[in-house]
Image (cartoon, rainbow, N blue to C red; front, side):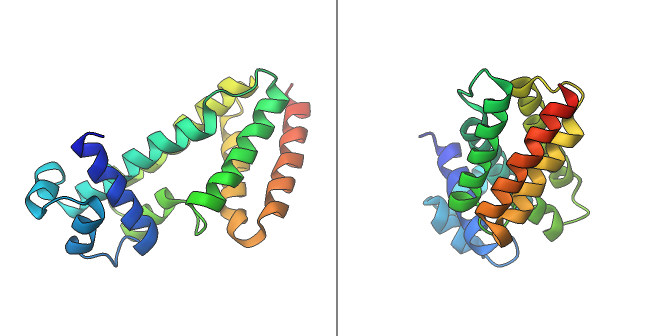
Length: 173
């Protein structure tokens, strides 16, 4: 693992565990498992640390959610929603880290851009997998709805999202 990826992975874990306001630079450095000098060499400021963590998470999320999907649109959407629920259970039990980052620094344009990129890339990949061209907003609403509801409702949220997904496929197919 190259040093930048190692730092980004450690920072991601720290922000997931502690949020964006709580961890000190020493906690972040320890999570990245590098010297303070190395941490600042690759991420010279706290906003840079947050962006590095989110970029790392974005790549992991897309790979885990969209790689090797079934070719059947209905099965692809079902698989995406199952993977989102699994992601929530294993990686994001407190909700979307991208939304949390923007909530912690609502005027940070780079964070807002990263959130938009994350949601747009996810919607594009869902459209590609399901063939629901022009349904980016609907797919984003479906996926974000699952991700926001999952911490409260768990599997019930997953089943509801899958039912709405079937309706969306039937309506737009």
